[in-house]
Image (cartoon, rainbow, N blue to C red; front, side, top):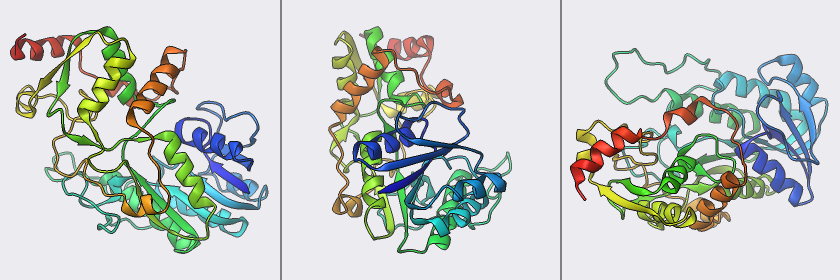
Amino acid sequence: MRILVLGGGWFLGRAVAQAALDRGWEVTVFNRGRSGAAPEGVRTVRGDRTVATDLARLAGEGPWDAVVDTSASEMAPRDVLAGAHALEPVAGRYVYVSTVNAYRGWPSDPLTEDSEVLDGPPDADVEYGRLPDDWQGPDWYYGRQKAGAERATTSTFGKERAVVLRPGVILGPGEYVGRLPWWLTRAARGGRMLAPGAPGRSIQPVDVRDVAAFALDQAAVDRGGAYNVVAPIGRDTMSDLLTACVLVTGGNAQLVWAPDKLLLDHDVQQWTELPLWRTHEGVWKVESTRAQAAGLVCRPLAETVADTWAWLHGGGVPVEHPRWAEHGISPGREAEILAVLGR
């Protein structure tokens, strides 16, 4: 099996490339070489996928049985479309990693793999969907961009040769966003540790290695489709996550649970100040029935936590990314809320 990974130098892209090598596949990665190193054993082609001459040169390196696109998270649909057009003659299939943000109902409503996807034309530029600063409604900009990019791949490769993966939160070794690393670092500090919302609230993060494995599985079969790549609803809870963080880092932290209302009254920023905490009804109610039927297997959350701590504790350094600084509540803010909760 010959595979092209768009990206390949960090987190999901690197996990895809490594997993493909482990299967004995021939792997080419295409990236600018600015964000981490691809696994040893891949063939690397340098270039910028927004540059037509670079895309033409890349196409000349083919053919491939499949493309796995992991590097379009902040790319306009029209750039994804240009890349798909350049690669379609030399690639059998295209696996595009999108996001649950592409659904109109996320995060407010429960979702299935047949839920409505946002509008977004395949040739949209980066301005499509931007909202005025005084907009008070849902911010669908990112979702519309991703929905347009999905259509760029499916309109080029067709529904039988294109696969769209819609993960929610991806965690695991190499994470660059900083969600799980922040919780692990906080747990390692010990003491009374602010825990958000209800302990039994369901969460659905998925391990980066499981996303990679599922992407490769879909690259290898003659079938298109769209899949929600998330852990099963109700399998894991916020308490499971934080308890695992405490245990793996030494067990000295004491979880102190704060009700949603108290956190909202203190203007705690959802999703970032206390990572993965969000009160919207549908954020952790994303069905993945079709993906599970197609072979998605999600390892235990405790394994993801332990392996991420081992990576961090062993000197792992995430690729620098501005989103890292967004995550985590300050010690002063945490102490203020803990004081309200008492001892």
